[in-house]
Image (cartoon, rainbow, N blue to C red):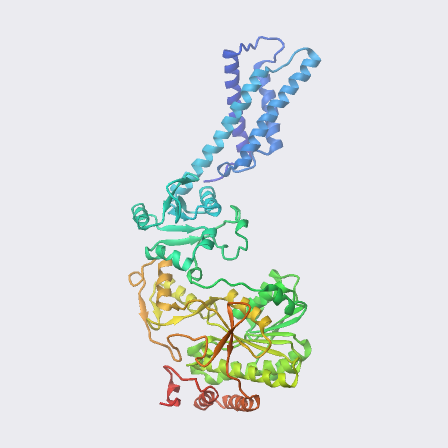
Amino acid sequence: MGYLPRWGVLLLDLLLCTIAFWISVWIGSNYFNYSSDNPRILPIGQQYLVIIIVQMIAFGAFNTFSGILRYSTFIDMVKVLLANLTTGVAIVLFNCVMDWSTAGHPIFNTIVAIYVPIAFVLLFTLRVAVKTFGEVLQQYGNGSPRVLIFGTKYAGVSIAKMLRSAGNTPYHPVGFISDGEHGFEVAGLPVLQLNEKLFDWMKARNIRHVIVSPLKMREINPAKDLQIFIDHNIHILTTPYFTSVENPNDIDAQRIGRIDAIRIEDLLERPQIEVNTENVRQIIQNKVVLVSGAAGSIGSELVRQIQKFGPQVTILLEIAESPLHDLSLDLEKQFPEARFIPIIADVRDRERIEQIFSELRPDIIYHAAAYKHVPLMESYPNEAVRANVSGTKNMADMAVKYGAERFVMISTDKAVNPTNIMGASKRIAEIYVQSLFHKLQKENPQCTKFITTRFGNVLGSNGSVIPYFQKQIAAGGPVTVTHPDIIRYFMTIPEACCLVMEASTLGNGGEIFVFDMGKPVKILDLARNMIRLAGYTPEKDIPIVFTGLRPGEKLYEELLNQKELTLPTSNNMIMIARVREFDYDKVSKLIDQLIETSHQDKAFTTVKMMKQLVPEYISKNSIYEQLDPQ
């Protein structure tokens, strides 16, 4: 349905004003003894011209015809009212002036008094009628799916109003859902109770969608309270900004934009993250910060969060050219006032790393560069050692040599009791930076502080399970799960980076910080929920196939070694793992030998040396199991 042009709206309004004028003349002639034969009164045709001209000027002054009729608001109605009142007042004043100058007035005041309310009623009715017709046409004429809105507060009511009035939202609200009071109406829609009867009611009316208001998302536990909708194959929708809004009181109708399907990330039960931003600011503000692996999932988010705290310059160290280029363009647009130095470099190239450190002298290093894919590294142990062990050693040694204040290493829960090459290589890197710090601290208490952070799987990162499942579901399945009992810990990229940055402020050096990852998630349940959220029935519309554990994979990840203890910190989401200490002089020699062996491409020899350095490393579902004691 097209929009009526401005001149068309004006002509339609003037037509209604014409009708109002002649109704006023008829009423005046029949009930107020109005006679056009009075010589002091202008002929009826001239009276009409005066009123219409004045009315047109008033319409222009208040710009009443510039809006779209079907989207008329309260403000538009006020403009129309003011235009009509102005017309009436102007004509009455005109009569007063004429009375004073010629002892007569050209337009009967009674006609004006009748005309003003009648004209407003007609103009008001036009806008209400067009608005109502537009809503009906939008909601029913194109077969829009009917939805219920979960949440009856301001945000939920705003969503309902937006859906009724906006032309680009294809949903038709038919009611609200409440887990509290019910049985009344809000904005003309019934408020229904959340119980089993509700789903029978929805099924009978073919309602398959529920929109959760952003404030409701904050009040409930999505992982628990929305599961009832998923179990009944109800498609859950929400506004896309709710996860980032800082103040719920800021929510208004303008900010509630398009409606999107809820993300699986919002249905995973995780503890609320709170970070002491002032502590982070103290160590980053006006400092030179280097992030290795800067274009990766964790690295790029770290770079963005670092900008909140005013670094002097941020060095983006990355080996992948295209991702670094894309990141640089995004950062220039997002942070036009910040300074960035993108550098193409490989952490395995010791000479290149030293050149960078000697020229730029970074104060804070966040070392996120690593190989992380478990099955792939199981096939390439030498590459894992070169990147994860040698690369970390190069970065750590240069941090010490050029006087960096802090070195924060990003590790993984797979380093605890490792069963694969990747986890073992990260554990060896942990051992190196920790033993290096303890040696340096004895010689110089003001040395570089080395801090290690461990966390589990990151939602949405490159190669993570959720994007993989999404592609499989989009292709019609099957969804592949390695084992029906496999579980994992999950955390979002922003949450992980927040905790990494705060952990870097808590450490005095040598600590390994572990994060509270919340409750572990069963991957099979994750797959089923993702299928339901996509509008399908698991095992019926989209099959689930079990493929068996991959090389090096175990059923569950551990955040702490059994021999390790934890100590609390000021942030209850961050704990310190008390790990056994290693002698740097002994460990560094073994690590040097391991790195040298990795360049000889003797995979079994490399893995055997890794097992000597990390005795708890026991291979699972791998060709290297033969190296473990029976």
